[in-house]
Image (cartoon, rainbow over all chains, first blue to last red; front, top):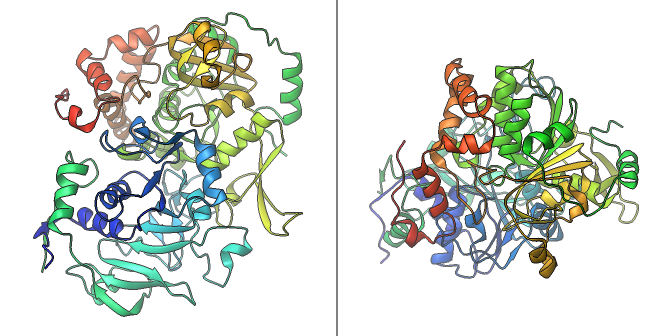
Length: 271
Length: 338
């Protein structure tokens, strides 16, 4: 029987869920923050052959110099196989070397398009937005050219919206067949959405967001109530397994001992 | 077509008549900024987010004051924040009119309050791109071609905010995006090693520093340390930027502090977060802290040596010790307290 942790935080749940989505021996475009903790957790459990790539130019490092605070910092280069710059990293993405990219955003729509640019009327208030966010960075590029993407976002109603205020990172666009290909894109778009409440995928026909699994303590109803649009529910809906004691030990003692990204506050008890 | 900085033809013509000789290019940072940065210039900013940002050069630009600048970069934190901070405090002394960029912020340390302040008050003309877009624009400039075909930054709203154009590829029949080349008037870079002629050796990721150097009209380089030309000539494959792309070489240890400089020092999180905190306060309407910081750390000092002398030794030491050590060795270090 699996030995589940009795206590874990929402961040630790997301990290565990992210790690479990990653297949061994795949090339993963790594962002900082929780995705990085998830990638490292996967490397230490089911995916020792996972190859991280960082947009500032490092391919295949082992993260043994503590967690990098930036995708461009020196810690991303530790024992890397190849180091160049941004053009090299994005050229290999455009070429098709990257299997999966992790992307986040402030807003997400039913087809997995993301906003990380601005809150306000676009284009009218582009030069004077209500809230200006940092901008695309490399997320827009990853969304276009990684073979698949996994989206990580906080599950709040104001973030899950029918209509984005600005489309920064491309998901399945309007969900129509070949929508991405028609605008000239190569990658296949979002495959999974991971939140504190659910693991979701996309319907094969409509490419609308669909609940695949509920996180421990959540129900379809509680997830729907925190979402600003109608979610589909998979026929084989299941409850996501809580983090195991081993996973929590690795996160807390080995990967992020100083809680740079994976906070332990707000612990929730498993059922 | 609007070319900010130089048009491809202007950039080519300038280079044809430029003195490309292998001469000693050492000068002070004061001299370099005075000579190569003019009002109205488009400045290509090297580094990436808070890694190897040309902070010392930005401080000198702030001390001297320049108007109507354009900043071009992929992702940056410290340099735009310092320049926007100066503009917020003394707009008659330093002003930015335009930014071409993909990301302004501090990653783990949060969004940029100065960027929020400037954009939300409509003080800048902004042009959003992606990281690959900006990188490829510098690369097109470096290659001497007027545009770069690319498969990202299309399909959403980013392409509506900038000068890119979708065309039908004449070979595949599919849509593809064309990005205009970027030729900044001046590239500002901080690297680890350079010789007196301007040959640069970058450690770790190159970001887009080589592309910015090759694309720009003039280039100012600060380096952690000057190295003998013989070292360069013995290992020429390690040269990231050739001398004839560089116009000024200044040895400035800690030239990208408080950001990270690969192999030399990690972030000084205390100072970075202290400065970031003052910009947060400024956006919330309390300008005293930021004013005092600029008066004591930038306007009130002559150069980077003076600036670094204001930083407690323990913080500098810790930033150096946390660079290039494995996690196990790092756990034996005691972080300095504010």
